Image (cartoon, rainbow, N blue to C red):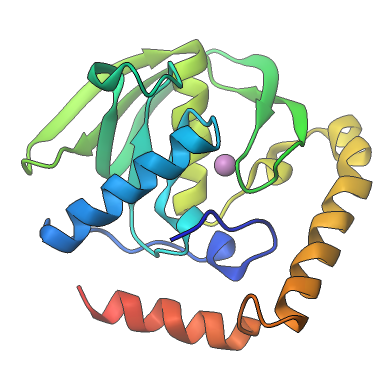
Length: 192
Ligand code: CO
């Protein structure tokens, strides 16, 4: 498992709900947490490791030494949004790119936990930002899509270089061609 960078097709793929919490899912979640901490992220969505499922891991402290702040959300959704605030945001699938993004300030969110219980909570500020960012990933939406015109223009060169890097990696055989990746994602979806 590895974190894939834009424009890996998994990042534009709409995720399927998780239907079964089995041993394999637990292993995948463990690996995702490890990758998130290693990359110094606050959250990681399954599409970022090329898994087409509605699954997020989060620790808004970003501190692996605070496992009590670690959270896993299955089939999450935002049920209410309030307010609006602009702040700097990055994404592990665009390493090094940071831009100001406008997001709702507070949210009411729902998700299933690993015990299969539906949990609802109110989140605000940084945590609300992380939620909106990660939920977008599950819908194939990326933070570059949420940039205003200035941030978008400022990111153009960086986005182009991510595109060049990924195509180069495909040419080298580090990643299959896009159509092959789509087939792999469809096969993974069929397993649940
Ligand atoms: Co991201």
